[in-house]
Structures are given as structure tokens and as C-alpha cells.
Amino acid sequence: MGGRLAWPALVVGVLLSVVGLAVVVVLGPDSRFTTGPHEVDTDAAAVVTAPGVVSYRGLQVDVLVEVPVNKPVFVGLGNTVDVQDYVSRTQRLEVTSFRVPWTVRTREVEGGPALPGAPTALDWWIAESAGLGGASISASLPDESVSVAVLAVGASDLSGLTVTFAYGVKGGFGLGLGAVLVGAGLVWVGVLLRRDTALAPARVAAPGASGGEEEVEEVEEVVYVFVDERGVEHEISEDEAERLQARLDLAEQAGRDDVPTAEAAGPDSSTVDRPVEAASGEQTPPVPVPAPAPATPMADPPAPTPVQDVVYVFVDEDGVEHEVSADELADYEVVDEEDER
Image (tube, rainbow, N blue to C red; front, side):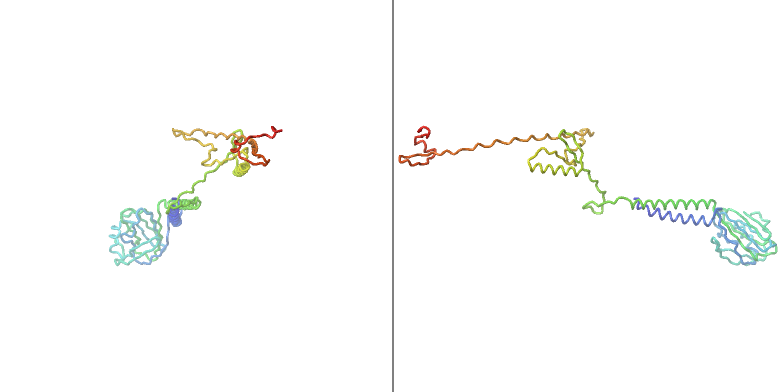
């Protein structure tokens, strides 16, 4: 799961960091971006923005206009309908397109050489300023459609006009900095997820399984227990158990039964103290297995008594001896040599 989330976290984190850093660099600590001064080539009496050009609702804008010294100039922000009606019969330069930081398109509109009246006498301006050699306004753009107008005062024109434009977003620097921090945090989380995935224990596919994976089963530890003649159990190592088993094998071959035994207590060994499942599901304490009693050596059997063979001999009249069987012995008279003597 962590491996699948690592890449999205990295990508989103990098994007947020880049966007936030751009906002921080562009706006600066005061959350404002300034461009200019930009020269505006015109000798008309008015420069105005067309309907719909100024459409950034809630944006804080500053406009500074400058003309040669001792030439009066006016700058104002008003409703588009009022501004267009005011300059409708005056020759003017109309801004038809504007893109930040400063990309403008303009067109010349024919008309009279002078304004219908002094702009300072009008009361419908949202923000206005007039002065010799320059003037500036600062305002937050309302929801209604508005236009910016730069107007010559009296019989002068706007030749030599320069415009400096600034705009900002309230709290923009903080928002950009927050985006950088959040993005950096996501990048760090993505790095940690990738590292945890790389360090995760490997999984081994089960035999015969297709595409499935299961964790490697743990190997049960084997404990070797030695029971001495007094029935006391001693845990011994595998090497010691092998040596005792070798001695047991030698003793069995030599007919000896007095050699102590060592048994491996594994999953199937009876010498390991294992808990016994009770009927209620609880575990009872382990029951020790008694040690086998040492075997008593057997006495040697008595030697067999040798059996003597008996030979029966018949002596005829001529003194010739003839060997007869036990069955034929009944037909003859038995004479003991000692009786004859």
C-alpha cells in the first residue's frame, strides 16, 4: 500500500512546492507584484480600458501614471458604462486586451480633441487622483464591470505617458509559503514511503500458487533435553545431543544399557514440557515426563552340562564284541564289569 502512495505524494508535493515558490517570488513579502514603468505611445486626450478587460474581482491594483513635468494628468477607476459614455465623443487610445504582467493590445478610436468636461468634477469615480507630472490610485476591484481611464486635464494631451501597474492578492505571500511547506512535507512522506517499501522483508511465493504471495513461515526451534538418573531434566545443545546419541548407539552395539540418553524435544517429542489443552480451552501447566529407570544387567546363564554317550556291547561265546542298540538290549543279559570282578 505504501509503495502505491509514494509516487502520488511525490508528484503532488513537487507541484505544490513549485507553484508556491513561484507565488512567493512573484508577490514578495508584501504580496504585491509591480511591473513598469511602461511607455504608452499616444498624443490623444484619453487612454481607457475596453469593457471586460479589467475583470479580476477582488484583486488589489495600483496604477501610477506619469507625464512630463508641469503637465496635469488624471487617473480614475469607474463603472465601465459611465467611463465609456464620458469619452464616447473624444479621440482616445483604447486597451482591448491586457495580460499580466504587461501584455497589452490597443486600438485608436476617432473623436474630438477635448473631453466634454473636467474629470475631477464627476462624482461617480470609484477611485480617482489628479496631479502635475503624475497621479496614482489604489483600489480593490469590485464585482461590477469597471474601466481604468487616464485623462489629460485642460488643453494638454498624453504625449510622453508612462504607466506603472501593481497588483496583489491579500495574504498571497503566506499562501505561497504554506504551499511550499505542504509540498515539501508531501515530498518527504513520499520519500519515506519509498524507503519503507524498499526495506520491507521479502515475500516468497507459495509453491504451486499463481501470482499469490505469502510470508515465509517461521521455523520452530528444537530444544534438546537430557534426563539424568535422578529424573532431573537438563537442556543441552544440539552438539551435546549428537554426542550422547553416538554414545547410545555404541552402547546398544556393545550390549550396554547404562549410558544416559538425550532426546530431541521438537514438535513430536515426548520429553518437552508442553501445555495441555483443557476442556474449557484453558492451558494447564506442563507435566514433566518421568525418566526411564536404568536397566538391570542380566546374570550370565549357567554353562550346559555335557551329555555322555552310552555304548552297549554284546560279547559272544568266542569273545567277539558286538555293539547293540538300546532297543536290542532287552534280549540280552546285562553284565557290569565291576560285578564280574
